[in-house]
Length: 138
Image 1 (cartoon, one colour):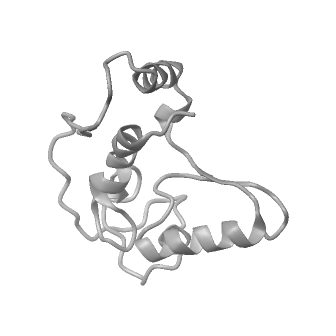
Image 2 (cartoon, rainbow, N blue to C red; image 1 turned 45 degrees about the vertical axis):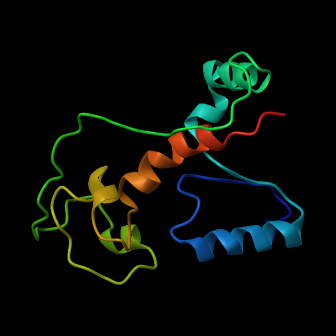
């Protein structure tokens, strides 16, 4: 945004409320658009049904309930292990405090471990479902 460009941010757009506030402050200062990636926002089926709901297909919608369920199974137990070839563990950790590498916790599973990196299901999938529940149709 400092370079005069709009910004697309992968979900979750922030790790904590203060980071979200900072994004809003920067957006207001720059006048540029920040969009968080959200799968259902671009799905034709979701766009259609939200439009229908807001146009009264089920009457006056006064409440939305968001939920998510899956059959992912148990989260693997993290164990200290050698860093895999090709993984820059320091780069992966970003600005978070340095921790030893643990097996089976970096690829997709990083979501479930250590608040320094992930946000568990709240930031992984709930962000999509809560977005639909709060979707304002224009």
